[in-house]
Image (cartoon, rainbow, N blue to C red):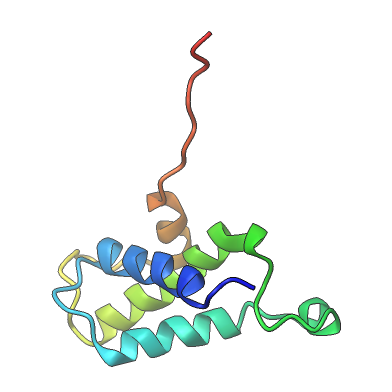
Length: 104
């Protein structure tokens, strides 16, 4: 099973980056953990999964990033102003997408 770090830290980093957070507060870690917990649904529980499938990591990271960024704005630690209206959509739009052109 994957460590919880591989779920939390990509989203935490995304949230800090998109908000321009000047520091990381404990409440931002709590927001990340709560956002991860909200990604567990009845299908996961039926399969006895504590965490969502790692195949869903990009969606999970966007949710965590949005929650962390929202908390940074709430705590007045964010420097990227104004605050986006749809934090989840903004987080998704800022994520790196590894798409490469064909070489040959």
